[in-house]
Image (cartoon, rainbow, N blue to C red):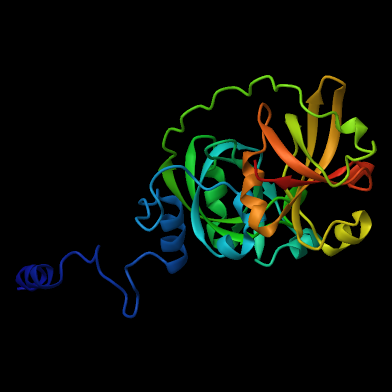
Length: 278
């Protein structure tokens, strides 16, 4: 009788190894689900444009258009992961816990950015390497590490598409010697610069405007070394808002035109030259 009763209980209820306690949820904890979602490769976002990645320098020259956008950064170079704590967090509008300085590849040259991670996406930092495409949100045009634009990492979208290699910068043809910017008749005239070196694009803020006397319409600047028969000379090249996209084209081997606004007074007391259309 006891044997029959035991058999009935086994058939009815099983061996108890899969029993669930009342009120207990068999699903993984919510935190584990979020961690698994972040760690897993993200599917490409169809909203992002297909083709070359975002050039962070666009956020500098056209912040009104690009801040808040979701774009793709095709990582050409990534520095080490840096943990953020204490006072350093105050530079960001987000609750950032990690950052990486990255160079995003784009046609022409691309640019550097401060790629930041909030706590729930912190594990993504371990997957950032040259050749990956990262989905980002443009947070700020500057103010990040080394003054770089700030990009928030949202997901890793796999491998970056190949970018056709640009030809190495040509040896620039000599043009005007900006070491003679103080000569009579130079200030106010348009002169040609054969670019031998171009620094990074910087936004002009109120302090810089007061310090260097930039015109009110100047919004961004680049330190440029111009080659000429008389030697090399540096200029402080500035751009108005409507001219700002031209800053992305300033590179070694290119020749540009600019109106000389002053023979000195710019950054490092260099001549101030406003970019001019050819």
